[in-house]
Image 1 (cartoon, rainbow, N blue to C red):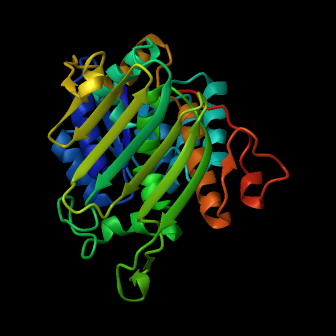
Image 2: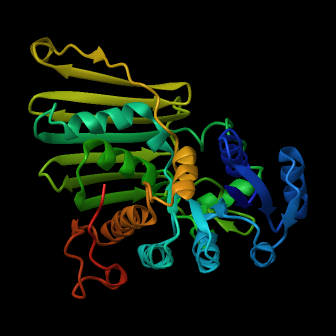
Length: 368
């Protein structure tokens, strides 16, 4: 697979490192509007072809697929251009700023017959994959309750850099620069983590979002810091289970931790993923009486990068697809509406009689 990299920031470096470890993958070109960043990136990975616009790269055309690692707001137009050129697309999450744009990208990719995947990176967590298998196999019985959290100390530590002094981070805190805050950035991960792991769809949502003051006047330079920093969400799942999902960037002491607990009639599972590793624990059988939890060994699973490369090689679509990511985007969009209107929303019945914001969102069928 001849791969083009669109956007050469921090995440692009992580992606290319993973792609280059796959046999048969060659990174043949890179695109960035920042000449200095492009040069540093291309020199580091020994990439010959360098472009300052996507149009130049498409005109050159000697690549099979592209990974879109641009800021959220740029995903829509650039992915559509790549799809129109007949290129397979691996896009960073979230797929777009809203469901309407994400659906347009989805339908374009499906009509063009190109491989389309979204980098929901925590699909790479082997314990999550094993938990889903166990749920689908009926080992927990009927799932009754789900709780999931994404705790990150991004705003209170300097592990990733300092947003107070490094302007490259500030777009993530500003709706005017294309950010849906923690809900859009890490919320999409924990929503996928919960629904995918529990193997059931989200069909009702009631959300609360909170933005905390982070600078005098709530602004740094041109950036109005108005994107949400924390959210809590109560959800109903399609199988009747109740769920609680929350995420924050203010979790002092938690660099980056995802946790999922799935409670069923026959047993329960807990998935924990941190920067230093992940684990799966279960409570089944006689252990239920003593509330004893035991570790479950899990083999490694193919990464998103490996599965995308294989999908391009074989022509067989793999998950997570644009359509799945678009459906997650609808949950996010309606969570924002839920906060504004302080009411529960049914994702399966959003219609023309709903609020103006909801009218832009066609009915959802979540595929997990």
